[in-house]
Structure formats: structure tokens, C-alpha cells
Length: 402
Image (cartoon, rainbow, N blue to C red; front, side, top):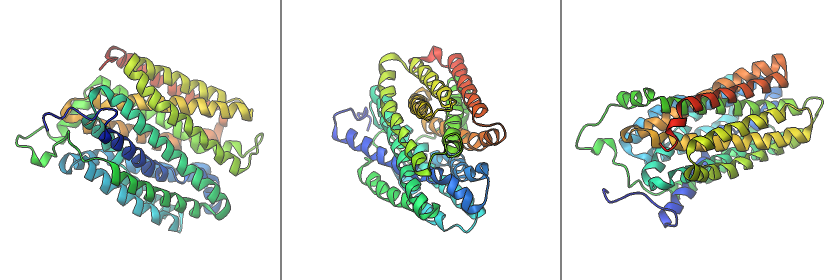
């Protein structure tokens, strides 16, 4: 194994790894956000307000945020691929029970458990990539994985939205689980066994404890700044998609739910921008691409504050492209900048912040939306982007080629 330096583009195993993780991303993120496209129908059916309905998204992302560190420990013991496989299978089984929930409390509990299981793939995938792909191509490979997450998020919404409008939100969510089951099978079939990692239980010499590996990352300013990117930008991103449907189905837009669901096609902008951002980071450096992506994200948010449908749609596309480009760079940078023995924990901490932000801001910004309206909601989103950019400038500029 000492001679293994990582798969390189053009090799069969490299292609299998990227395609397998692509479908792993689909299986994870389609069900993670399965309720987001049907939040208005879910709120009406269960007689709850928009912020409470959005908790069905926050519950799953909170479960994922809580689970990423434990999953990184499991992956260090049993291996990357077995941990990811167990997580995605468990999540799919749990997801199949969510449409059977009799009330919102039961639904939130099931979504929380589903998120706990789903934590396996984002907790491990980037560490797996950093160990299995030649170091020169990790950023580009991470971009391809992030592209799979965008397709998953998009497909889950496009499947559940139209079916939910016709047959109810329960059937909409159930249809997503079927899609995830198929994607999980493809993932399990294609993803190669790890060659760049030895499970902890087989090491002849004791290594740092889990707590020590976590603390190494928490003491590193670069890591903290990267975690802040995930926390802030993901929080703003999920909040926009949570409440966009409520905004556009109300005056002055009054769009039909089916039309609003189609706006999730904007996710394709992230599918395009994430691998390109990864490739640009290889050529230009991670820092300028990250900051440029944050600026694009804020510009898209500013456009969405204009009460004109076409401008809102353009803004959504720009906002989505910028966010996923920033996420691709920050998430791919995290394990590379970490100490080798703490890479899994570095990725897990990034996703702890990432989904912690999703859970917190996905609900909290709903209170701003309900109390103050869409314009102040978007002002808050732009402010969050500004904070992310300032933290990146303060801590990451000097580590451009880390």
C-alpha cells in the first residue's frame, strides 16, 4: 500500500470512484431535502406555520450535523466504504417510514433519525477522496462529488414537488425514497475499496485519540475559517430554498406550486459551477476562487430581492452557482489542509458546521421572513455572505496554496 499514491484521471478506478460517489451524493441529498419542495402542502395538511414546516428539513440536517463526528470515528475503525454503505442503507430504510408519520412530532423524529444515518457519506466521502485520489487532483474530484450532491438535491425536489401537488406530500416524499434506493445500489456497486487507508483497529502503533484529532483541527485558524464558510453559507442557502416557495406563491407573484417546483432546476447551476470551481482552484488557488464565489452568491441574493419574477429566477441561478462553487472549494480544502491523521475529523467538523448552519438558519431566518418580509430576509442573507467573506480574508488568504 506504501506504493499507492492515489488514482489519477483517466484510470478505470478513478472513474468508478467519481461515478460511485456521485450517486452516493444523489442517494444522500435527495432524501435529506425530500420535504423541502412540499413544505407549503405539508404546512397546510398538518396545519402548521412555515417555520414549523421547515423544521422537517432542519430535523434531518440537525441529525446529520450531530452524526458526522461519530461516523468519522466509525470510519476510522471499520473503513471508509463500509461506513458509508451502512449509513446509506439505514437512511433509505428510515426514509421509507417518514411518509407514514401520523403527526408532525412523529415526522420530525423520523427525519432526525434519517439524518443521523445520512451523516455517514458527507462525514467520510471527502476524507476518502483525499486518500484515494492523487493529491494534485483532489480539488477537481471533490468538485465532481459536490456536483452529485446538487443533482441529488435537485432530483429529490423535482420528484417530490409535482407528485406532492397531485397526490399529497406523503406520496411525494415516498417517491424520492425509491429514487434514493436505486442510487444507493449504484453507489454500492461502483465505489472502489479503499487502498490509501488502513482501519485503526489494524494499526500496529497507537495513534492520536479521537479527541486529540478533533482538537488539532479546532486549534487551527484555517480549519475554523473553513468550518465557518460551511456554517454561514449553507445556512443562508437552505433558508432561501425553504422560504422561496412561500414567497413566490404569495402576491405579487402568485405562482402555481408546480411552477415554483420547477425553479429547483436552478440547482443545475451548482452542478456546473462546483466542478469548475474545483478545476479553477487547482489553477488559480483556492482563496481567490472561494472569495469570488461568495461575491457571486451575495450578488444573486441581491437580485432575488427585486419583486420581478424574471429577476428573482436569474438571481436564484446566480445565488446557487456561487454557493456550490464556494462549498466545493471549502469542503475540498478542509481535508487537504488538515493533519493527515485528522482528515476524517476535519471533514466531519466541516459538515458539523455546514449542517448545523442549515438547521439553525433554515429555521431562524423563517422567523425573520414571517415577521419582516422577504426584503429584510434577503438583507440578512447578504449580511451572512459578507461575514463569510471577511472570515475567509482574515484566515485563508495566507494559506492560498495549503
